[in-house]
Length: 160
Image (cartoon, rainbow, N blue to C red):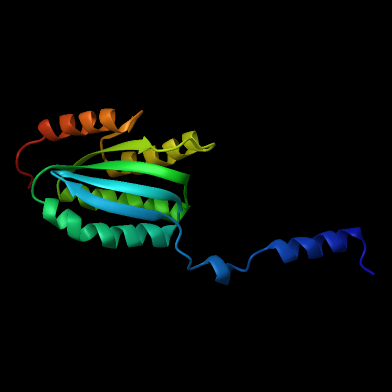
């Protein structure tokens, strides 16, 4: 009969999910659309690297239609707003690339309250700061759109 410490260790082992079961599962969902010079991105977390890469592929065609002139992103965020470390790096790389295509700013609106809202703000601030992207955390969609309109009007007409 195992002693108490051995029983606790066995119980812990039973609760650990093998990495092979979660390694390739995509977390996060997104819906994308274009409104004028704005890409509206409704996203739901948590996010892992596979979700970010999927988002990149899905957004590529839309972004091609915006490239060559300034454009902006309105991100409406819901769900658990967490990113894995590798997804943060991937998203920062993606945003840097988008900036080469005319991306001029991102406004973010949290669609629902979350216990980890401040943590997510810090993560996203890091992503956009690393990318050189102007960003704004808005209280509501109307103020986000107003800020984005201001970003667009302050940009030169053509990007090189």
